[in-house]
Every structure is written in C-alpha cells, then in structure tokens.
Image (cartoon, rainbow over all chains, first blue to last red; front, side):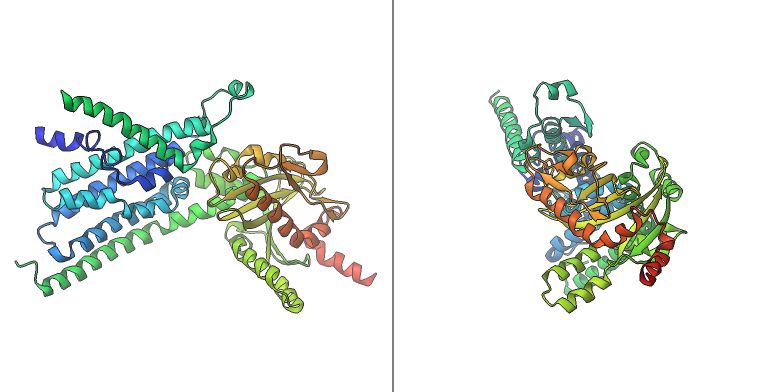
Length: 205
Length: 279
C-alpha cells in the first residue's frame, strides 16, 4: 500500500505533468479563462488517462509490440469520443465552451506518455491510480490558473461576480490581459518558478 | 503465443476495431435523442430569451422541459417569409418541430453571401427568391404580439448570430447575440447583458421605413439617434453586429412594412396585397 500511495501523490506535486514535465500546455492555455470549463476539462482528462492506462495495462500482454502505439491511440480515442458524447448529452453548455478541446484530449501528451511509461509495463490497478493521479495533477494546475484568470480577468468565480460593484464604481477595472492566452502561459511560468524554488530547497536538505 | 506474428497482428487489429466501433455506435445511438433535444432547447431558449422570457432556465433543475413548456406557452405561430414580404408557410401547431423552426439560418446566410458576390442581376434576383426567413410570433405576457427575427453573420474569428424581438409598433423589445469563437472578454462580450440590453426600445421600423441601428465607438451612443455603444477593444465584432442586423433587416423589410404600423395579422396579408392590386 505504501507503494501505491507514492504512485498517487508523486504525479500531483513532485512530478506534475504541467509544471515539471511541461506537457499538455496547449489545452491549459485554452480552457482556463473560466473555472467551470477548466474543472470539466480536468475531470475529463483524469478519466481518460485513468481508464485508458487501466485498459491498456489489462491487455498489455496481448498487444503486438509493433502496433502498440496504434492500439494505444484507438483506446484513448474511444474514451475521448465517449466523454465528448456524454458531455454533449448531459452538460451541453460546458461542452460548447470546451468546443474542440475535448476532441483534442487525444493529442494530450500526458495520456500517451503515461501509457508508454507506466501502463504498458505495470499491473492494471497501479496503472489506473497512476493515470488518475496524472490527470488530477493536470486538473489541479488548470483550476489554479483558471481561478486567477477568472477572478482578475472577469471579476467573478464560477460566473458569479465576487468583486463588489462599489469597486468598479471607484474606478476598478477587470484586467483584459488575464483573459488572453499569453497570461495563462505567464501564470504557469510563475507556478513552475514557485514549485522549482521550493523543491530546490527540499533537495538541498 | 507469439504476439509478433503477422497473422496475429492483423486479426488483433480487426477484432479491436470491431469492438471499439460497436461500443461507440451503441453509445452514440443511445445518446442521440438527448443531444438533439439539447440543440433544439438551445434554439428555443434563444427565441424566448431575446424577448425577455424563460429567464429562469439557468435556475430550474429540469431545464429542457421548462424551456419546452414556456416555448409552447408563448410562441403561438412560426412563419417562413420571403424577401418580397409574402408568407410562404405558416405553422401554428408543434412549432418546435416545424420547418420554420428547423430552418437553418446559416444556410440562408450562405445564400446571402452568394448574392453579394454575384454580379449578374438576373441571377441575384433568382437567388433572392430562394431565400427563406424565419419569423416567430410571440404572445408576450406584457401584452401585444412580438415578431422574433433571426440573423447570422461573420464575426472576427467565426460566425455570430442574433435573435431580435420586434413589437407591433416597430420597436425592439429585446435582442440577444451569441458567437462561436470571438475573443473571450472582448468580442465575446456581445453575449453580455450590458451590450444587448442597449438594443431594447430602439426603433427598427418607423413610419414604414427601416431605421438603421448604428454601433458607435467610445461610449458616445445616443439612444435617441438609434445608436448603441460598441464594445471597446472589439471594433470588428461590433461592426459585424451592425452589418449583420442591417443585412438581415433589409431582407425582412418588406414583411416588416406589411405587419408593422398597420398591425395586420399574418393571415390577412394575402388580402391586403389584393386590395393594393385592385386599387
């Protein structure tokens, strides 16, 4: 069990897919303008990484080595399409906001990377945990970035205005830069900076 | 078993694809109805919201049935009109499933674009005749009939569209806009209440003539002059809104001139036309 715990915690902070491995940046820029789509995207990616790692690990001994990438792609694509269909049927508004980025989960390097590095060699259960944890690590960064972008860019959280109207009357303005994708890159840069400087101190000890 | 043999690989791929395809087909068929209802309800929401109805849709738990109920309650008639102002088809029952509701405003916009780029006058006239414009007639609880018109145009990055409710004396009762991929926070703000609420009470038709709505920069809009404020930083999207409205209203114009002012109900249009001829 001690082993399992490490599989779960490492990808969330210490080997976070975005801040440490710097994977999946593209979608992190696109879906973090508001909190709600960022959370749905985080959950979707978590499900896809977890389930596809699990399934690949289940059938890992049967997969012909020469076509393993194709098999991985088919499995990942299947889960992505399933999620996209369910989003369209049950949370139509959010699926509209995410638009093409749900489909583009397929191209998210985190998923293929984790399957190659972990799912293909490990047992199903640890693979599931590893996949879920990587998705959560990705989602965590998404939520942090989206929180600041929505708060400073639109003055709201989950679409509800949190900055009081009196601030606006006193001359406060929403920062339009936070709505643009470059600000997401800068925020992620800041997160990487914070994390690296903390981890460096840990390493010295 | 040797997993590297060619026959094994081929059979493996075929079986895998067959299984995945079956799963996807089953799920897709199972969810199709729900997805289509979502799309339908979204359009019904546009039509109701632009006239200030069904505003609780975000709060109720079962949104789909709420919106469909409100739609049936208030939208009493749907029409397809042509650019000469004649009613081609009229529907009074099951409006959510009728041709006027299913009519794609995107397709109509594609025809308009072809008309604009065509230089041959005869051809453009022919094409204008093929245009179909949807009109929804709403029994507004505040009294009177409202004519709900549509519009579709090109924004900065992708399509934008609008629904506009017009009262019987030619004023805009409400309007709303939506877009596919305008910049969030800039062009995307056309969906905000701050922008669309400016259109309320502006005149669309006065004295039988179409009044153009001007989108002006710099917050200097004067409601009396039929002006609305553009979104700062989103000049192209704001201009696109103005162009979209003027383009569509030009095609709606003959129909609007017939119904507004004389307050003639849709059914008597044929008669009024005859009286004009006999005179």
